[in-house]
Image 1 (cartoon, rainbow, N blue to C red):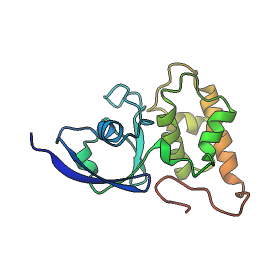
Image 2: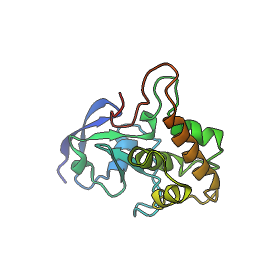
Image 3: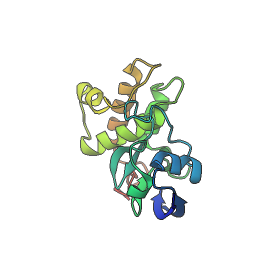
Length: 173
């Protein structure tokens, strides 16, 4: 198979790489570029562990070919934090113990940030519906829902230093 040259902008950094046409985005991110926060789970879109943002939209990177993402902006869980500051969703998961084994957590966080960007004040039911495509086998979801509520409340508050919350994909910068 002939490799294809592609360019991905991941967490604000441009990367040029050569991939086989069948390479999934999740494998390009993890194996070629070292963004190992994006997890490989089911490879069938069932679990959501591989969720990233592609041009600001949550996608399951196990069903996107890397060549389809050529020229796109990709945001992974590693792109949520800004310097030493955690994104409110990361802080929410920490404060509310929204993880146990942690395998689903990156995908949950990426899906949750997408949900909160679309609906900044979701009900508990809307949070559960928004996270439907992500599976967790450890937590029972209660603390994950609490974590998203925590982040929504935090995002509703003014940022202490007068800056703006950095949304994945560049919004709010």
